[in-house]
Image 1 (cartoon, helix red, strand yellow):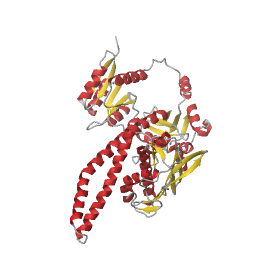
Image 2 (cartoon, helix red, strand yellow):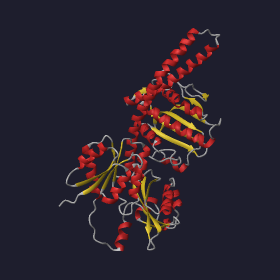
Image 3 (cartoon, one colour):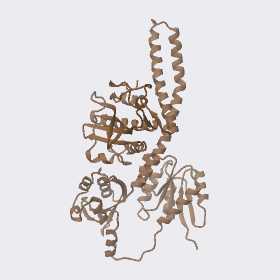
Image 4 (cartoon, rainbow, N blue to C red):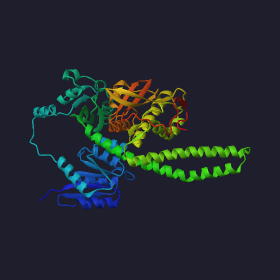
Length: 511
C-alpha cells in the first residue's frame, strides 16, 4: 500500500487550483484544496499536510498571514511551503524569505516545473527513522554541525556556542561565553539584526526567522527558538545560522531582471499617456500665439503654456527613451553628458521638491563610454534616490546646504584606464563598518520599510557587467561619494548631443 503524501493547494483562483490538482493527481499524492486563507488554516489543522502550495496575494487573509500562522504552529512549524506569485518584487521576496518558504513559483505556472519542484521538496523533507541517542551523543552532534549555533540566556548573554559559531566569529569559546548579543554584532561589523530578532524571541516566546550580514560579505539566514524548561516556560534561546549568500544572490538577480521589465513598461505607458493630451496643449497654445499680438496680456500666458508644454514633452521623450533602450538590452557608445542630461530630466521633480542644488562638472569633450544606456540610467536614478534620502536625513526638507555634485574625469586605477563618473552628496554619510556590506543584496542602512536593500547591489551588478567598478567613499555625518568606473575603450570624442551645463548650480536640473 502506497503511503500518500498530502499536499494542500491554496489559491482564490479556481482555475489555478484545478490546474494544480490535475497536475499533481497521482497515487503518490493526496491533494486538498482551499479557496482562501481561513479555509487553508482549517484544512492545515485537519489534514496536517506534508507540503503547502500557497498563493501570496489573496483577499481577507493573504499568503503571508497564512504562512506566519503555519510557522507558529507548535506541532508542524517546518512544513515546507511553496509560494505562488505573479509579481517577484523585492519586498515580497524578503517577506516570504523571512517566513522560510521552500520555493517560489511564478505565474503563469508550468506543469512540468511544478511536478519537479514538488517531488524535490517532498524528498528533501522526508527524514529517515533514527534510533534513540544518548544526551552525550546529541551534544556531540550539535557541536560538530558546521553551521553556527549559539545559546543565550534571557539577558541575551552567550552561554554556549558550537564549533561553527567559533569559526563564524573567529574567537575561542572562552572569548565568546558571557558576551552580549550586541557585542557579538559589533565584533561582526554588521547591523544589529541579531539583537532585534533575539529580543523579539524572548518577548514573544516563539520561533522567528531573519537575516544577518557577516563582515566578510556573506549573508546568513537566522532561526531563533525558545528553549523550554521543566516549568513550562523558557530561560534560554537558541540561534541557528546558515549561509544563504548564493540563494539571496539568485533572488536579487531575478528581482533585477523583473525590475527592468516593469520599469520599461511603466515608463512607456506613462510617456504615451502624457503625449496624447500634451500635443493638444502645445498645439492650442501655438495657435493662440499666432493669433495674439505681443502686447496682448494673453500672449505672455500662452507663451508660458507653450514653454512648459515643451518641457513636459522632453520629460516624456526621456521616459520613452528609457523604456526603448531597456528593450534593446544592447551595448553602444554613449556620451556621458547625454545620459546624465536625460536622467536629470526624469529626476528633476524629486530634486526640486527636496530643494537640492545640483552641481554638474562633466567635461563635454570626454570620450564616449560603451554601455547599456538604460541600465546606466537605472544606476544613476538609484544613486540620486540614495543621495536625496541622505541629504534629507541630515539637513531636513528645505536647506540651502543640500548639494548633489556630479563630476567626471579620465583616471587610472590598478594600472587600468577608466572614465570615472562621481556622484557626491553632503548628506548623513555611512558608518565605516557598513560600507563593505552595501553591495550585498537586501542590506540597507535605512530603517525597516524605508528601503529594499537591492538598489545598490543591482547597481554594483550592472557596473560589473560593464567590466567596471563601483567604489564607495564616505565619512559618517559629512559626505558620501559613489565612483562609477567605466573601462576606456577608445580615445574618440563626440562633439554633439545635449549636455548638462558644466559647473552650473541649479535647483532645477535638466530644465
